[in-house]
Length: 114
Image 1 (cartoon, one colour):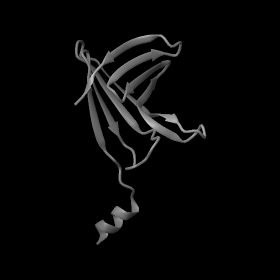
Image 2 (tube, rainbow, N blue to C red):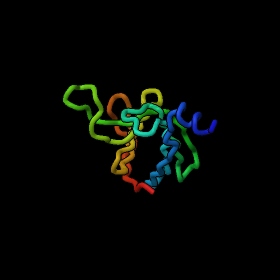
Image 3 (tube, rainbow, N blue to C red):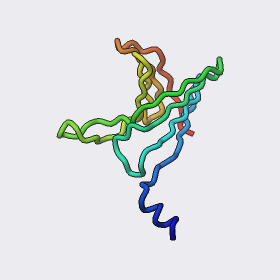
Image 4 (cartoon, rainbow, N blue to C red):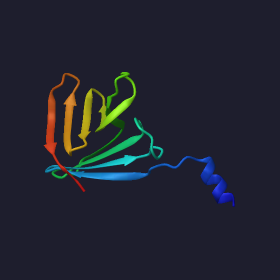
């Protein structure tokens, strides 16, 4: 009975991971969001270079277009993560982009979701 009560008191987290494989990188996107939450900012990016073995871990959010009201998240585009003045975009279609704050593309690789 105690387990049932605890389950009702604490919202369910969608502790899931998605894996993206590009020619040069393996990226894991971990969700620490409540189930059904739209516009969540509790994702973790774990990226590893297949060449060097170097890895990076970043916190970020889901990425959406906005609805007509200009605030409500609408269509899901993917995920975005910030590291200083560099943004990491992981598109829904598997494109991995790394862009500076001056909109210079450092990396653009198409990958496949596993």
